[in-house]
Image (cartoon, rainbow, N blue to C red; front, side, top):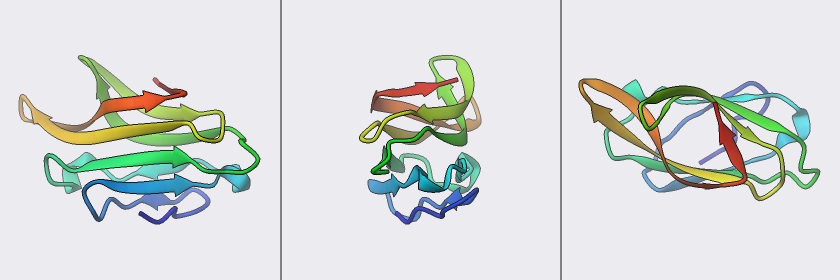
Length: 104
């Protein structure tokens, strides 16, 4: 999955896709709304910048019952794997696994 670059939206166009994000431009990204992604689609986001600078991704997510809107990746090789699920009539990105990321 292509990194959209500065302030762009990450388009999830394939289930199981990997988006290697380069934070060299210092701008945040936004993950495509789960409302426009079929249930069950998974994506992995990887901080792939050589400089390892801070990177934030805005998204509509859940951790347990808590809403989350931001993924923070502070170091190169930080990653998170997400899946779209519809629970009680609401579609959100849910975290399957991660390493080095913080969601809030």
